[in-house]
Length: 209
Ligand SMILES: C[S@@+](CC[C@H](N)C(=O)[O-])C[C@H]1O[C@@H](n2cnc3c(N)ncnc32)[C@H](O)[C@@H]1O
Image 1 (tube, protein in one colour):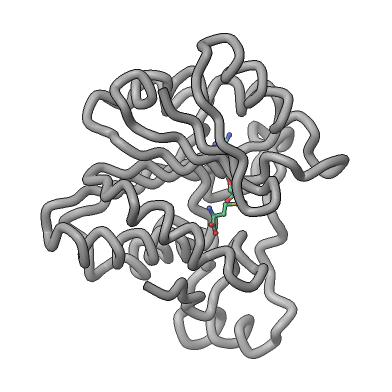
Image 2: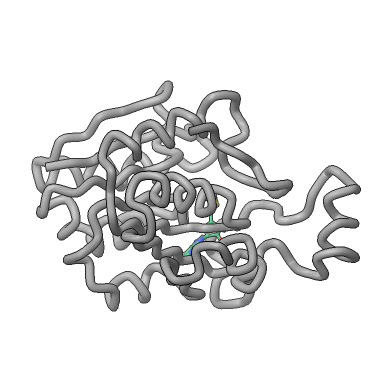
C-alpha cells in the first residue's frame, strides 16, 4: 500500500518513509493499534486503510494527542500546524471550516472507520496510564519528545512488548533537535533487556521482546 498525504501535514515528508512504515506494520498485521501523537491524522488514516485491507472491520485504532497548544502543554513540542501552501490554508478555512489540528477534523478524516476508532484528546503522561494495554499489539510512539514524556510513554506501554507486541518509536535519532528521545529509548531497552532494531537510516527504533 502507498502512503497518502490527504492534503494535510505529516511527519513523513521524506520520500519513501511512509511506504516503509506501512510495510513494517503490514509485516505484523496488528489488530489493535495505538498511535501516540496523531497531529493532522494522516498516518492515522493510512493505518486504518491498511488494517481495514488486512482485517476488514475487525480492527481497532486508538489515537491520542493534545490537539491544542495551551499553558499546561507548553513544555511539549508541537509541530507548526499552519501550511506553507496558501491553497491548503484556504481549503481548511473556507471549505472544510476546520482546524486540521483538532480532534473534530481528525474524526472527520477517519469517518469511514468511525466504528473502529477511538480518538482521545489529552496528555500521554496521564492518559496512557488509564488505557488497557492488554489488547494492544502495536504502538506507534510519536508524541512528546521530552525525556520524561518519552520515558513515561514507554513505561506505560511496557505490557505491549511483554506480550509479544511492538513499539515503533519515531525520531529516534533527531540529533540536537531532540536528543532526549534517543536517551530515553536506549535506557528503556537496556533496563528491560528488550530487542531494539534501528531502522530507516536511524529514524525509527523498533522495540520488541
Ligand atoms: C510529530 S507529531 C505526530 C505526527 C503524526 N504521528 C504523523 O505521522 O503525522 C507529534 C504530535 O504529538 C503531540 N504531542 C506532543 N506531546 C504530547 C503529549 N504529551 N501527549 C499527547 N500528544 C502529544 C503533538 O500535539 C503533535 O500533534
